[in-house]
Amino acid sequence: MRPLLACLLTLLYVVSYAQTAGDGSDPPPSTYNKKIVRNRNIDASVEITRFTTAGVPITGTNELFDLRVVIGPDIAYNYQGTDPAWAYGNVVSARLTIKEEERNLTVTPGLSNGLWHVQLSTTWMAFNETPSVKLEATFLLYRPTENSSEQEEITLSVTVNPKVVNRLSTLATRITLVPTPTQANPQLATWQDDITQGQGLIATNTVSAAIAGFARHEPVVANVGDAQTMHKLVASEMPRNLRLGTVFFATTHGAMTGICDSYGHDPATIADHFMEFQSFIRPKIAENPPDDRLVFSDYHLVVLISCQAAGSAESAKGFGIYDSDGHELPNKALVGFEQVVPSPGIANSNYQTDIDSFTSWTNSFIEKVVAGYTIKEAALFADKYHPITFHDGNRPVVKMTHKYRGDVGGRLYGLYGDGLNKEANQTKFKVTV
Image (cartoon, rainbow, N blue to C red; front, side, top):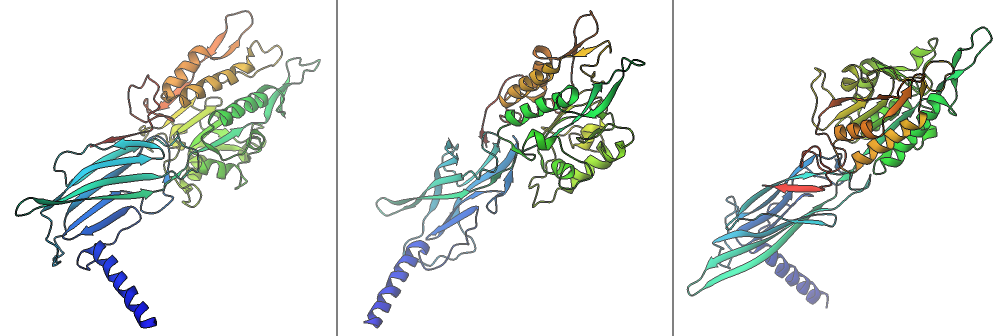
């Protein structure tokens, strides 16, 4: 019985092998992102470029890759099968599907070598998601016969699963200028560790709004409480926070050359807490170990609610918004203040800052960014309709405006470069020839 079973298994193997290879010759090997089949003398293949393994990281609103669909004879293969060779093969149709979103690709008559370019936004997907990207094509094989023709259709597909990496790094100060009047000096105020008022409360409110608003970005720092305990000299805190993000939102004390961690402002200890844009922040971001950060685009967006932090190009260089020569880079932006931000709530200081206006501005700005407006348009809108304000005595309210550095067309949601810069955009991806 065993010899008969062995003969049957061998026969089944030969039949199956012949159906896939025609004459028993294998086609070139398929790979993770490229599938190839051979039918008689013709090879057909579909390929999604760039994604050579599972989990290749994608981020932001301008990810690029290509689709290739090819059919034709392998010139290195000498077909000697018993079935007549095909005269030619054509691409009949092709389709791209990303998650549940489908696009039929433009196929011209007689196409045998198709190439399409894809631009993908990732922020419509959840962070750490591994979406399916599927390319499917149908081919027609043809040969004339004496009285008619022989035709055969084959369908081939390949699916890859990249990984969405969009992360929000946050920083919030806990150091507040608190009124401590004395009889000799009724205007005296001292810097204290206090998050219930002044700068500490502003930081709590605005960073909380950022974490809630950028919901499709993974928080590097879990909550505002952790964002208010970031120390420059603790590797697992501020250095890690800087290194891993793709968006950075900070409400802290600053200057034209850098910003403070959560504890910085006291001149006696400022060296332990002040982070220079060029000598500290730039090197920490540039470490970028691939097993941690995964993406190498530096930051897409940086928001600095800090005194003077956007007053020079150093901040944009430090966060990779500009290159080292000061030239803006595509799809990157920094929003911050050129001037000193008035200290809120100090008695007899001749000015009072509206603490709630910081939160209103933050919510308005993020709402517009998430809706698909460019970062610059979002900042202009928030400055106009929800400005950060303060007043000096009985004089009119003064509205603070933000300095914008970077690409005027930079987007964090929608598709970069798609449509007009002043319009909202929610395009998920597009395909061009």
